[in-house]
Image (cartoon, rainbow, N blue to C red; front, side):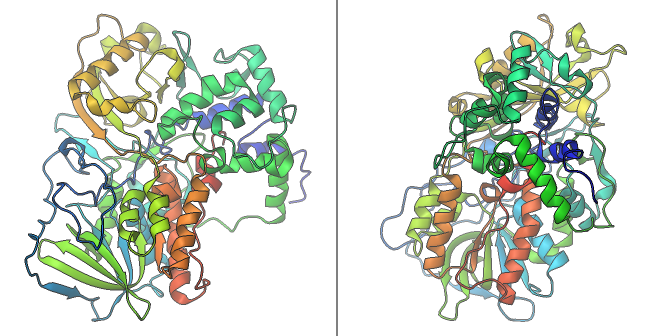
Length: 617
């Protein structure tokens, strides 16, 4: 352990995301190579933006006293997710007619008492929080309930099979295999079903009419995505030859990257990366909120490299705890993972484990605080109105749904949460014969390698990015066929909501013919077009302050027992939501056991502090 910090700088930079000089570009590229993950996913990740409590009909208003704030727009039928197949799902519980007397049934835990925790929302954040409570905190939260307004759990995870050899995802596509993803897979018994992409497969950025590979190591000096000056500027900025960090000013991702690493790195690497991960606008995304660990490096050491060295020294002085011996080895290199039968494997496994503790088609209408400090939750269910009592409530629904549930007692929290932006994204899955590919897209053996490609907004391509699904994981398409998952829309292209499915497919096909396909390629086989009207929460400027304001208002109202979770808190990557779920479960356990200050909302570690959301790791 007595290593010289200078001699170990390379290890620091690998973990924190930076290297000096030309090697800085290789590490930046390594993180960019994970844009396909959700993991970093998407668009390339919208995993837990559960649509669960969005009213389907304007008339189905929740009874309230006084004026009702503006409600989110109804979700089109084609946007409703399904983790198994496009077949119909169970209908949401019907509403009671206005003015009609109704019986309210009180549902208790198995032993007749109140629940310790009710997790509201059956997306991946809610499922993993419930599983973590059951696996690691059953002593403090033995009486557990998870409720979901739709007819199935899984949130936006949407794996589809057509029975003809195609398997594809219409929500998040993959995950970064960090230890928390491995842990949840072990906890629910699906670790043997995991599959990983080839870490050596190239990733591409479309620049000046050419798909150019991002650097992956030895080619850091020869790759042509950046000019010689662009590489030099990035290296100099990384070691501290750059404009100083502004005081008392929150920088956007664009401002931070241009100042630290130069215009070329931003325009050719980071801007398309932001489109690929957040479907966002880097001029509005907060560096501190979206990529907080990189932001902290400069604060810590005066430059990205200086901060990386200090971080290494800190880790040497205070090493992390031993790795869980149950976990399988991490796959080598920079790669992404899934399961043999798609991402649906994980929510299905959790649902089996917690089958006695899950209620679907339960739509939460109101939350009330009782005089004894517990909470009453009033649901609309197929059996009528149901009331549940709980010591703690974990809200893992989207922020705009949480806002409406808090509107009565926490007006400032409502104002904060309702303002978070969720731009639309469409997932367009299409297939072509392998003969449709341009010859330069094939390797020497005639194979179609690669993770996928990203498209800077400045290059005249509308599609955000394309994942080579049939090259990434096995058994995704029949032999002789390529399967492509394309994302379109986002913060800078909200007009997709006004386009038909045919128009979206035509746009994607047009873009692919510009970059990937032969001009005379046949028309695509259209497998799926899934439009998510509210896809990915944007971690824009003042995101963290706004979230903290919501928590502070809940504290002031005495609602510490209602905890905020979900991907607008955790981060947009599937892996980040799983990582957060374990921390969130621990936070809930501490609250229930009295180890947390009764006047504090707390707040599990945000995504901005996690390695998986770091651009350059």
